[in-house]
Image (cartoon, rainbow, N blue to C red):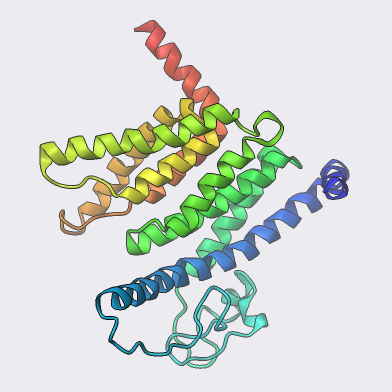
Length: 296
């Protein structure tokens, strides 16, 4: 680990362009994998839920034998014609451009979202490497950012925030803050952040439900707040909650103009964006907030 850290430090110092290009390419590759996670994980969870339901309520029912389906198997293929995606057709962004955004065999259009997720992940990886440089903080933030991208994509598609991502990410946040007295905050502040990150929106949820007799957010949102609280600490929670609510009100309101009001919309992406904003500018935001309170 020491030699790898030294390598990155020297690369950043002597060849910064190579350093940033290296992590951008890694980000593009991770973005390609996140596309797989965003598409396949909800299917895996749905199948697991159906199997558990049948096993509990219909134990006598014979369950069909399905082919293996996980994040690795089977290989990616065209959903229209079943054409297996080769390695040369799976290069982030470049393959999409070379193929003209269409399947090589049947010419069915490939969703523009795939290269956009790859590009966005690459840009975010570049931004994190630029902001934090060759440090342990950079590696930790990359894990957080990649996890938030996957969570946002799944929540946007299915309106769920899977425990399989958010809970491990929460524990990684707490563990990260045990390293050398905490990468971002001390352990106590991290634990309180996780606790109150869950409890505060949970209380808001029940107050809203009692008053309006409807649900304002889901339990996955509580866990995501708890996750960010574990990473950034309890003192950053007010800013995260405030910014996410403002973003949700603005963009959610725009989305609701084009569809029925009773259809739920995803809140996870706005929490994730707020988390990244506070991650980078949290100290300044809190200082500005305290200054405004002092002047009132």
